Amino acid sequence: MDTNTIYIIVALAVTLLVLVSLFFIIKKNKKSKTLSTGNEVDLKLKLSKTKTGLLSKLAEALKLRGKIDDDLMEELEEILIKSDIGVETSIDIIDELREHVKKENIIDINVIQSKLEEIIKEMLLKEYSANTDHFQIDSAKPYIILFTGVNGVGKTTTIGKLAKRFVDQGKKVRLIAGDTFRAAAIEQLTIWAERAGAEITKHQHGADPSSVIFEGVQKAVKDNDDIVLIDTAGRQHTKVNLMNELSKITRTIKKIVPDGPHETLMVVDATTGQNAITQTKLFNEAANLTGLVLTKLDGTAKGGIVIGIKHQLNIPVKLIGVGEKQEDLRDFEVNQFVEAIFE
Ligand code: GDP
Ligand code: MG
Image (cartoon, rainbow, N blue to C red; front, top):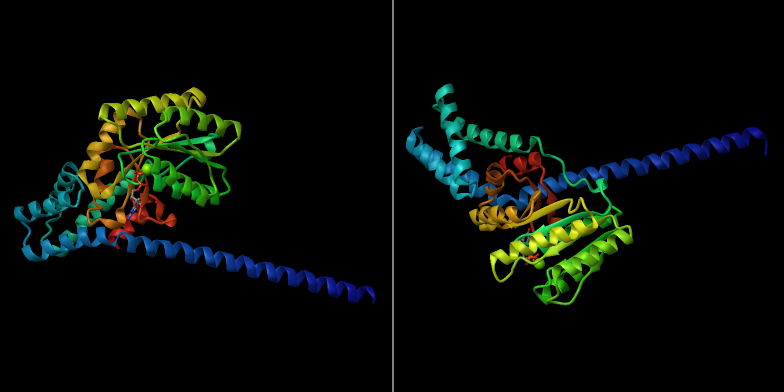
């Protein structure tokens, strides 16, 4: 073989290699693109109850009345309140609508509808413009997230879903079974840990939650874990007990990791409506809540709570649950949410 032939063979091999790599890069990009649009379409589907519940009712009222007057405004306000946007927030929205109607001399019913949507969208965007940061998981090690909320709202499920997400990102994750109130709660968390490939620290049913949390956080520090997700009980004999328990848990974490917990999330069942707001206020007094997880948004026509909750409590929604499966936990992205509801 002369040198020329060798050159040609090497050149051909290199070209082939480049082509093959290009093929795989393009294929991968395409795949991730379809995946993301798939997710958006999927989110629309999951939130379809909220969408039809709120928007079609507004449209119906507008069509029925056909005239812009005080009665119409009152009716629109009532629809907003009934979709769990909250009284205060609903009044603010309609006040703004009235102003626009006056200033812009709006007489077209269709214009009212789009104006109303615009006001709600703008309000949501404004509420979240300063707070788009999600978890800063690289800011601390271990990064500790404490979950609170009353019974049955979806705490354990949310932890399971989130554990899987972090493990898939290559993180070392530990769950702590701080809900020692029911044996089933510990079992349920164990199953999620296995499924996600996360470690778990648990004690016997009936044990002191703070002691299992102390042990778990200590172990996480020792093992160099990246993320710790702590489950807690949503039930005690009295509300005061529950709140005292929560403060004790926070103090326990701080004994080992002084700047922890890095997030204290309150999990709220969207289908319980205004009750959720009352609960959140109470929990916020005992623990310094940094964010909300709104679950079961797939099952309610009253998803308006997403709109009112930040406006009323000034605690941001960070995650939303749109189903029982692992992939049904989403970061709350205001633009995506607005699009899913209004477009
Ligand atoms: P916990 O008591 O707060 O820990 O609540 P669990 O995690 O045990 O959840 C209570 C029930 O709510 C379970 O049946 C979950 O499958 C269900 N659940 C949790 N999140 C969602 C959600 O986003 N959508 C729906 N449809 N169900 C959910
Ligand atoms: Mg639970």
